[in-house]
Image (cartoon, rainbow, N blue to C red):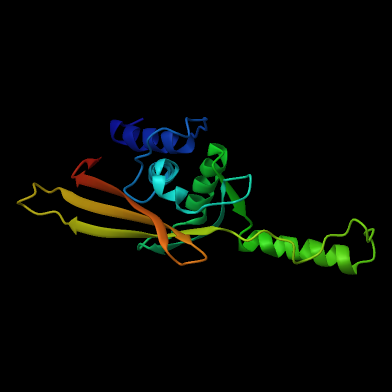
Length: 208
């Protein structure tokens, strides 16, 4: 085989091969500069730590024996230019807060829809014993609601003689989360988490 054909054949053979392996989900992910799993974990963890440690949550005096705040997890508005599933952020935060043992959560919209279907089934289908059928009007009202905003600022510089042919991209993420007293609309707690990622792409590839 002529030498000039060896390189294309080698590349074609490599492209035809594939492999799959498990990896540590907590490993820092740097495949691209876009929002990724490490960003989700970092931003969520910072907010959870801040919220659990906040002394401001003692502001609400609960007369009941169970002093845990009953929380409604609201939405997170995505104001970035990327398509980001912010439900993943709220799920991550809610899971960690529940595990802390300091918070309770009431069902969000999706859960309320499922509850509504089930209550109507129990009340209207005729298949459920009336003595055990659940009814509307017995839910416990949430004490507070948590909601937030995720923003990004993106900057870039193309290749030039001054940059030595290197292209640079920079993205900054700001995540703001608030906890509000439903009775008074007072913001009891608020914090922000920030991330900045930079990517440089040279003539022969990229570097972070």
